[in-house]
Image 1: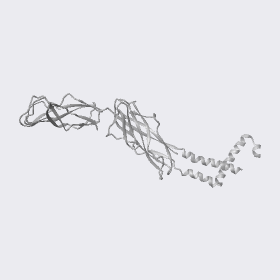
Image 2: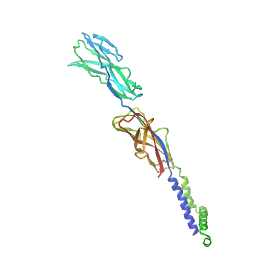
Image 3: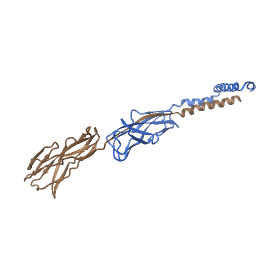
Image 4: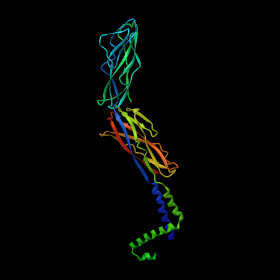
Length: 166
Length: 178
């Protein structure tokens, strides 16, 4: 009788051991993080892309307005006056972030059914870092291709530019 | 029994306890079957968990918006966006990787933070973002070598016009044998 009770107690004692081991749980703490930045926005600046006034001839030619702000000609065109400008764009966004400028390869300017092509569209850097002020302006230049005997007129087109964070 | 009756009640209690202690000792020597139960218990390795390397749960860089957005990093390492915020595709992100070790082939459970308990706080500020919907991709069984690796993902809520900055927080992952 005495032995029976003793055995029962031992069972209770040892069974309790594995139960306590299984009940052990362990935890680990880990970091989580995220960065929030201002959205990037693009607005047209003060100047449109303006090739100025051009006089044509019987020979084809071209007018280039550089993004640095100079105007050059080649072939059978001459420039009149001094009004011209590269297009300007203003980007606002998160200081320190870089963005890419997306330019078209070409677009047309038209006056009624008459057309000229604009190509060689360029800017200083296609990748730009936003300065501390959170705002940066960039300029876009291009080349206007003028056909021989291009009809006189007021030619207008749209230069579509986009930007995106890298 | 006759002896106990002759004693006071306090003394009797003490004596019984002594007898029990003695009986346990005796029995351990007598019964080999019972002793084996004890050995089984000792073989089980304690379960442990660690965050692998220095990788954290990282939602990356997010562009804020005027409407609320949700950024989800899945345990398998995908990042998706719903609502107003958008992610910089070039920014690094990661689910949090963990490794568990313990007894071979043992089943275990994982306890992840409940919704509403984890927040990230802006460094140098008080603005917060909630992290909810914690999920893992574990099989919940240790391998034959007693290990298991898994990752934890979650969903970050980016408030409308959330203040820009670096946000940090922490969370706990708990494992236990089943």
